[in-house]
Length: 368
Image (tube, rainbow, N blue to C red; front, top):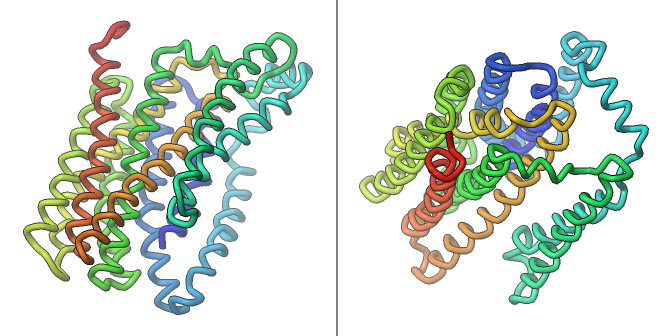
C-alpha cells in the first residue's frame, strides 16, 4: 500500500523545474499550489488503490500490481505533455549555451555515490545487523564535501551538476534545510500508522488506506489555497502550517490513547485532517519560497537538490522513527498502541525542528 503512494507521488516531484521555468510571480505560486493539490489527492488515492488491489488479488500477489499503476499515468502524461507544454522552452538558449560547456560526469558519480552511502544504512537498518553499517555515513558525508569542492572548481570550465552559489541564497539554504527536517517526520507518519493499523489492529489494507485519507484530503485542499497566498504571507504561513501538523500529530497520539481498539480509525480522523491541512501549508509554500530567488536557468539543478534532500530526510526519518517504534514494541511485549504513540512523538520532534528553521527565517539575522 505504501508502494502505491510512492508510485503515484514521485512523478510529480520532477515537475518543479518546469513550474519554475514556465511561471513567474503569483502564477508560479498558484502552479505549485495545484501541484501540491494533485500530490495530496494522489496520496489519498494511493492507499485506497493499494487496498483495492490487495483485496482483489490477495496479499500474496496484490502488491505486484502496484508496478502497473505507472502505465496509464505515463500514457496520459505523454498526451497531456504534448498538448500543454510549450514547443519553445523559455530558457532553451541559455540551456544550449550551458550544454556547449560540457556536462559534469565526475560530479554526477561522486554525488550519486555519496547519496547511496548515506541512504543505505537507513534503508537496510533492519536487514543489516550490527553497527558497522553506520560507518558508511561519515564516508558519504566526506564525499559530499568532496563533491562541493569539485563543483566549485568544475564551474570554471564546465557546466557543474550543482552550482554551489545556490547555497548563498538565504531563502534557498533555509528552505532546503526545512524541507529535509519536515520530510524526516512527515514520511514516517504513514509508515508507523499503517503498521499499527494492519499489524496491531488487524485492519485490512483497504481500511488502513481509508483511515489515512483525512490527512491526504486536508493536504490537497490547503495546498491549493496555500499556493495562492504564499507570496502574500510568506514563511509565516509555513510556520503556521508546521504548528498545525505538530498539533495534529499530538492529537492523533491522544486519540489512540483515549480510544483504543478497532475504532482508532474514526478517532484519529479529526487530528489527521488537521495535520493534513497544516502539511498543505508547508510543502508547496516552502517549495515556492525556497525557489523564489533562484535564477530560472538554475531551476532544474535547484529543484533536484531540494528533492534529493527530501529523499534523504524521508529515509532518515523512517529509519529513526522505525527504530524507536520497533524497539518499544519489542521491549513492551507487543504494545502496538504505545509503540505507535512513541513513534508519532518522534515524528513530531522532526516537525518541530523544521518549525525552528522557519522561525529563524522569520526572525533570525538577515530576515526582513
